[in-house]
Image (tube, rainbow, N blue to C red; front, side):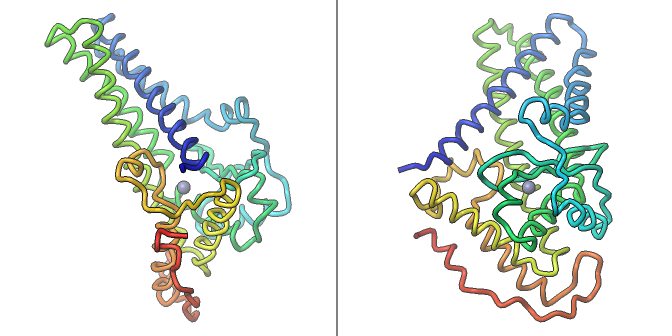
Length: 290
Ligand SMILES: [Zn+2]
């Protein structure tokens, strides 16, 4: 039996694809209608505008608020220690743990309220380090650039293909669906890659990288309890394709393995930690079975 979370994940991925398809088809149509490549500047301008104003959209549609709770200063000073000046910390009411790092001009981190209610500082710090990794790796800029270029490139491709082969309306939509589907899969693969880099960043900056694995493990257990099914089975190959992150139990295993090495080595600034390795418990989570 599939969990509700898996269905939700699929529905969210399908929604993202539907948006990619709608915009690609729209811009492709506009290129053909106005017969000028200057229309291709429109998706670029819209993507940059959307990215610059993302916190505002989140505030308007998913009701995020400025976070002024007990961890605010700790989160901001954790950023400073990584050389990242956070402009704002936001919170959104939700009963599961999550966070994101929007902002190409104003660097922000948004947490769900469950993070602050259910986790000790050590694990909140680990999640903060992962989000700082997105800023440190310039992911908001990466996504804005990738999406802007992909939308204008796909629109140009579709318009050129439709005109070259004199496609009718049905052909135009089929080509738009195929092109945006390929782009969508590439974007998800890019997301999984950037997520693994953010995990890597967190491992390097944290005194106790294993706290990130512990946070993910707790959240996995909560999800399993809520859904009443195991989230640790090996998925079908196609299920992995529509994920924005690698599987949680796979992330836990690689953080544990990398964290063990890093604890014996250097942190991101090249300073010697001089601390003993964390004691690593058996990676029972990688078995894929309950
Ligand atoms: Zn992330």
